[in-house]
Length: 378
Image (tube, rainbow, N blue to C red; front, side, top):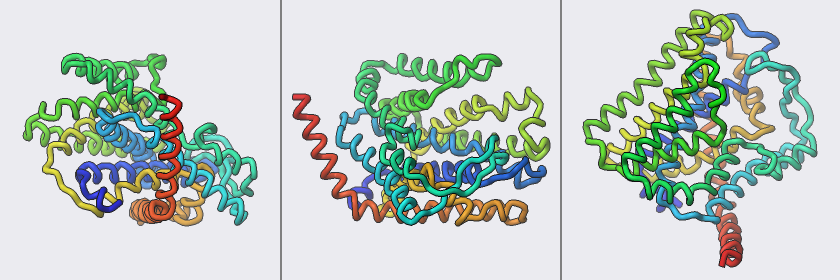
């Protein structure tokens, strides 16, 4: 494993790690608090409201990296089965531990999003153990489910991209951006609302463009793109933080400011542009190969599945990180950042252990399934 990992471009792998840290931060904010009513406006509340969209940015980075590597790849039943097995191991394995040791979990007892959602502890149910055994069918993890479905389309998308010249490929990316992002900034254009798969297709076309025309951008151009791609989300979050620090809550923000800054359409547009520019810039950097960085990056899928387990995730934030107890303290933001790093390290260690103990068996099973499928195909 370590010998294979060291040959990956570590610049891209660092980007993968950062993307996962962004996603953990988002999940911490969206799942780690429970108030009967919105807390009083404060710097800490403004921080939560401002950075709650960070997971969307992380997802965009992840998907464009996947699009880059999936373009030109061969369809692999073994890969699909391997991803499903990893999803199953985390979904069912954690649930089985919760059931055996009678661990109480947090259930939603009230309405509302994020802060106004009331949570209470309850027993883990045997029906939930059953649902965890069928994570793909029951949608226990939307991202991995969407990713697995998307993999089925990759061979057809590769044929499509292979037959596009540069002009048509550019037009395809512009069309996707216009329909999935730009048009949605227009009021009452909700008919164009994206679904879980739109980003996968859009970022695949963007990533495949960067791979197919890797020499299109000069070194100076890539550096400008990288700087611009970093500055865009930084400026966006500064503005978003200032808005919430001034107005306090979503409902207090004027509609025109809300539409330009707060809506999903607004940040989705910025993140699409930023992720494309950052990734294009990173591809222009001198390749570096670091076995440790690449090994850590290889655990990011496992980190995602562990910390966002459908039934255990709130226990992480409430029982181990104690976020709400620190909410009104001066060290709250620092505490959150340390928690994100700690969760990542613990989950990465667990996934590393999984790779050593279970991955050889998973490779054997996925290989057998691939042979069976191949025999039917013949």
